[in-house]
Image (cartoon, rainbow, N blue to C red; front, top):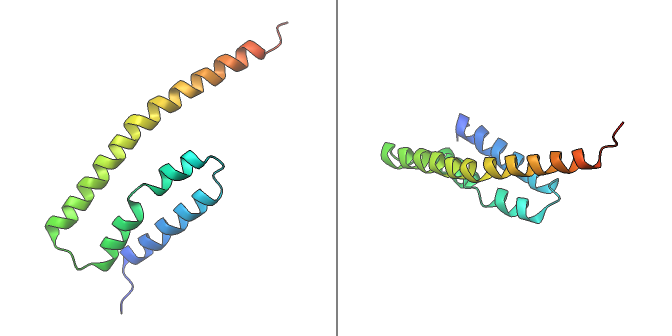
Length: 95
């Protein structure tokens, strides 16, 4: 039994997701993080018995998934950031 770089990646990914979900207060964010295909992708790559075509498909699916996640998350984050700045500006005392 050998220890490959993908085994280390699997360990890091699962540990990071577990810690991230443990310290996240919002259940919606926890559900979003747990729905990401990162652990199953890392586990498939750690097994190492897949050929080049399925591995390329996994990379492609991961890239498309992250692109969709970024397309939804970043505009939402920008909108929430602007709303919070506007609310803070309204509450700031004026001199």
